[in-house]
Amino acid sequence: MLTEFKNLPDDSRVWIYQANRKLSDAEVAEITELTNDFLTKWTAHGAELEAALEIKYNRFIVIGLNQANASASGCSIDASVHFIQSLQEKFDVDFLDKMNVTFYSGEYIAYKPLADFRKMAKDKSVSKNTVVFNNLVNTKAEYLENWEVPAHESWHNRFLS
Image 1 (cartoon, one colour):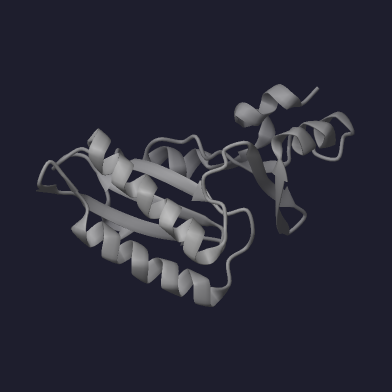
Image 2 (cartoon, helix red, strand yellow):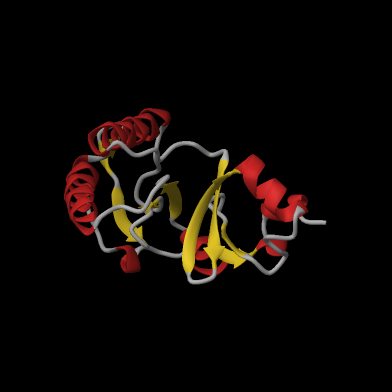
């Protein structure tokens, strides 16, 4: 069952998939349509899942799930990952590589391999105040409060000296 992201309770589970490049507005429109269609049919052991989509900055697919009615099962999570894989193939974009970091570089959003980010931190090209996207958040509340944070407030802090 599809709902609006703003209507999900704060304890809803979220999954964030970051693209390795900025998506065009046309791609965002098509991804939105395809994802909403998937979420409308998404179930766990036959139970409808109340889910929502948010696409941020033409780079991030954020799927939220209200677990009060029904929780995602292993099979339903697998189905969502397979769906994201199908988007990767269709749009020639990588959404599943977790070994990359997305952060603000001035007003722009940069996407770098973790090794490059680590080197940038060592070279002082990024600092503890560089705003990073912490895609490890688990709930809507964490997403709203702790997704875009200074690097020293996230797991990225380990790379800063």
